[in-house]
Structures are given as C-alpha cells and as structure tokens.
Image (cartoon, rainbow, N blue to C red; front, side, top):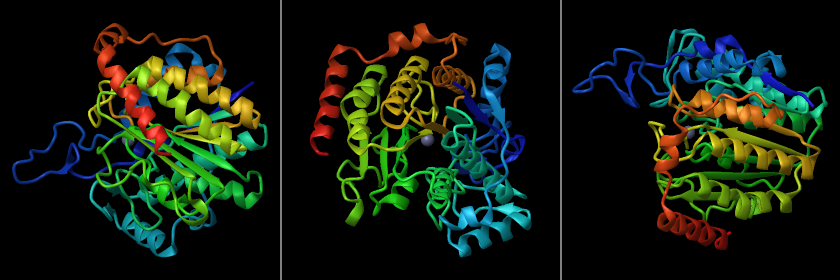
Length: 366
Ligand SMILES: [Zn+2]
C-alpha cells in the first residue's frame, strides 16, 4: 500500500492580518511580537519538517497538485463570492469577515489549498495511492458557500467531493470532522443532501457559538444524514475512542460510503490554545487506525485526510506524525515528548464515567 502526501509551499505563505490571538490589534490589544492569528504556517511547516527528520516522509508518495479550477470552485461557491474574494486579493488583501484575513494572492493560495484536497481524492479514487493526507492551508471546514469563517476561505473538502461527484468517481461519501470545532461549513453545504453523511465530533459551545447541536440532523432529503457529537470540555483519550466505537463507526457502517474523508484538525489535543480537550498523540493514532479499518471494511480502504485546525506549534507535529504513521502503516515513530504529563492529566474514573454517559445520551438522541 502507499499513502499519498499532498502539499504545496505556497500554502505556508498564506498570511493573516494584524491580529493578536483572534482579536484585531487596537485599543488595549497590543500587537504581538511574533505572529498574530493562531492559524499560522508554523504548525503545518513543523509537521512536514518532523516527517522529514524521522524519515517517514521517504515512505510516503509525496505529491504536488494544481490549484482547484474555477469550475471546481463554482460547484460550491457562488461567482459573487469568488469575484469579491479575488478582487480584494488582487488589491493587496483584506478580510471579508472578521478572523478570516488574507494577504495579496490569498485567493490563489486558497484555491491551491483546495486543489490539494481535490488531487488527494482523485489519487485515491484512481488507485494511484491507497489513502492520502492533504496538508491544506488555509483550512476549509468553517467556510460557507458565500461567506468565509474561522480562518477558512474556501470549503476544501466540499470542493474535492463535488469535483469527484462531477467526474462520477464517487457516489456516497462520509465526512468525519474530528477538528475540535464544529464543522459548520461542511454541515451547511450538505444539510439537505443524502449522498454525503457529515459527522462532527467537537467541543460543545466552542466555535461557532451557535451551531453543532445534536438535534441538527439535516433537512428534507438530508434528514438523518448529519450527525453532531458536542462533547463537554475536558474530554480525553477514552471519551474520543468511546465516541468512535459507539457512535461514529456504526453510523459509517450503516451508510456504506465509497469514500471516507476526515476533516483532520489537531486542536482537540490537550495543550491546544483554542480548545479545552485532552486528546493526545495516542488518541489521534487510535482514531486513525479505527477509521482506516472502517475504510477497509466499507470502501476498499479509500480514505483521505485533509488538514484543518490545530494551533500548538509544539504539539501538532507530533499528533500529525502519529496520524500519518498510522495511516501509512509505518513503524517509524516520533515519540510524544509530553506523553507522561498528558497521561496524568487525563480525566479520572468519575469524570470519564460522566463523559461516557454523556456520549451514550447523545447517541440516544440520534
Ligand atoms: Zn478547529
């Protein structure tokens, strides 16, 4: 088997505006000495660097990709949005909504980011590779068709799905979003559709503030084809695996997809600055092994992971390495330097029992 790894240097060149954390600089908010938005190139670049240093990169089928075409983008985004984004990008950059700023050329970089996801799906569906990881940046899962949101400028995964549907290479897709924030953009795009099952496991009430409820199951033809698992803050390793085993994997089995795509954020990790969960490198490794096994059972192993959030410059590379090693079946490891600390910080038996009960309660509402 081979695992494709899709990346492009320009994705690291996407630049945000004058922010400190997620707040514009000004008033009492002092400019940051280094960087501004938590969504910066370092998490992604350091992940790629770690793959090279351990040698795991040499076991992957490393590929580039063309940018998504205008036709690809138009299947998801209206012309009015693309034109407005392109004009502002050509004029030096700016922002269409708060917290999704871009610099000159941001439009082309966003299309490149989507193009990596398109190519990863193509390569898996044509059996050029067994499965794939797309190191897309900017991320995509919060982006609405006419409205950027939460660092996301184009809906990378939806663009890739629609391109493959147009080519007739897929009919039924599962999107599993384990980014710690709700995958509201993907949900909105497929809310009335029954050919794409969207599943989001996220921290309850984190971001966006007003989406991600378990009751939001889809509408019309799409009723029953949207699954939200809003977990309480503090959920850790065993809670995530319980959610996978008791809710997510049975949902995938019932749907019988011909491709599984993971919106792969690493911000459920224990030291992420934008969330309050306790996942570790082991959690991401185990979730990857489970979803890979599900893909082997239901769709000949066809599985694509597309990078989303994850804001710890130190820890994202180790979570990503564990994920990609599991995806590719490699024995090369990058041992977690803080595994002992995070093992101690996991929920104790009483809170874990509460978390399991919460997940079982949510499962009962589906
Ligand atoms: Zn996120």
